[in-house]
Image 1 (spheres, rainbow, N blue to C red):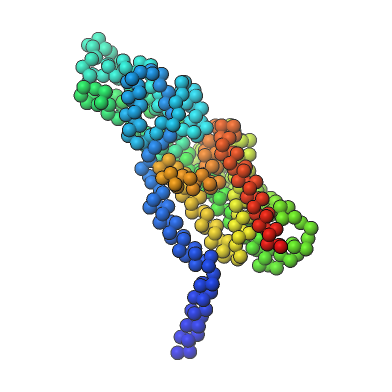
Image 2: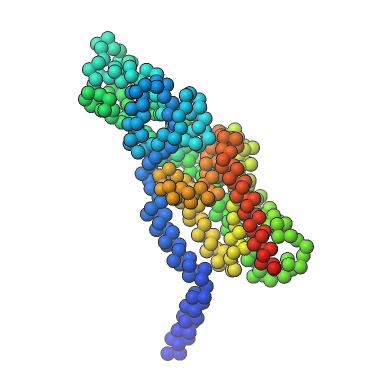
Length: 381
């Protein structure tokens, strides 16, 4: 009986402690709720509305109907129009679009030569009747995106024919850039850099200020002439080197074990990684100024990590998410870095090609450091 009473006393104490710790109680409710919403609502493996560019070299009524039919599948969404193939390839390289739909200037003749139309002449050669109607140029660095567009390869064009065509070749030719073999490692390894850096950088710095408080060092820091911003900068510099070491390990082993290409943009890769490390560390510092204990800092880190991993495009295509989930993803540094590192490593893109993500990352770092310094100064008062 005495043992049961002691256990009951400890049990009552733990319940009272949980009731007072609003952060922990909130995480108990919010973590499963966020997970449920992310997996049930935001995560969608059936990719829809993939942003694509159209290069209409025909500029005829048939070519416009063909574009509308492709867009009616809801697999793709035309967001840009270009007059040349080179401009469309540049849009793919900069990650503004994921594919380009190239309609040749003789699209009407290609359709007319199909045996199913009854318009092909006996003199037509096999080469003439086997030419695809149009061509897709696809960013193959994302295997899910590539597979979704490849599914349009044999798309029927019955609305353009008197009867359903019986073509001897696929309707569209599909050319996969950057990863023609559709190897998963090509897509996973660069993205893994972003995920591991997100986990380690935020986790290391989220407890930085809290740790000083729990160890009793806060009074010493208050009495020193160190300014809040100087303290924040001094806190993150060691972790910048750790992040760079992790990047070298992941990409180096990825190249040796899985033959993942590096590309020629080593300087751009180095600069973009520094920006992401800085943005992640500044986010961790902001969390550290909010948390009261290291446990709370860890809980908030998990709260940030889950959306960063699931919404960044690492596991599931960004284009398959609802608009609200995409807005949330755009706030997270991991989403922008995922585009950047895959562009540097796989598409040979540079900082100028990805300037929107670069500017956003730099702005996030500066604002995060300022907010962390102001919050720390406010606590000193």
